[in-house]
Image 1: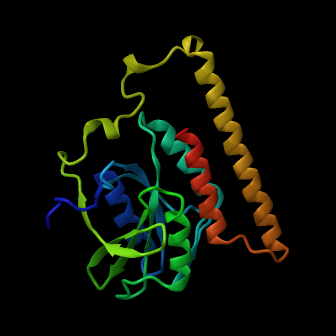
Image 2: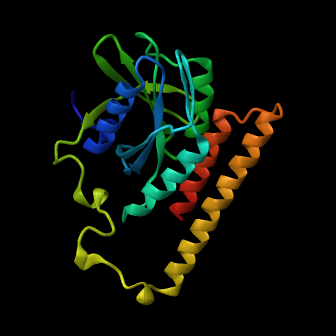
Length: 232
């Protein structure tokens, strides 16, 4: 496969391993996750982390639901650990059997992610027939699918600055009294936004118990919102 002159996806080894182990753990039912990382100017995606669906997610044959409160929380936590501004790139989920095309429900979810993003989004399907395989698609802002290549970082594909963490040694430990007021204020606002998002999710879950279903589209919209705020 060639990487020249066309968009493609590069997984960090950590993100790739997370997808594989999540699929194995939930086998034979469906599961999935949120892909976060960077979009380069040429449209190439670098997937740094995979956010799992959560401990209260629902998994069945041919269907699953995210634990939206967990996903919102963990996305926030993970994004804060990196020096770079991580953003939502797209989704992945397992399909039953050898079906490697999207359902009508998938189409709506993929379109939601692609709209409003300059380069659209990505969406991957995992199949186990019986060896696991991954099919990657680019989703345009209009919902058009294009099959694209993907690769796993071998240590040379992803520049080190994209994987740089804030604190990696004892010498890097901060003096909280010397952190600028602007940074502290920003962290406080971020925390409050995270709390508010969680409360909104709780309200929607409560409503769902009374007959109003909190849909996957709404949950993923919340995830996009909170990560977009983190990158501002």
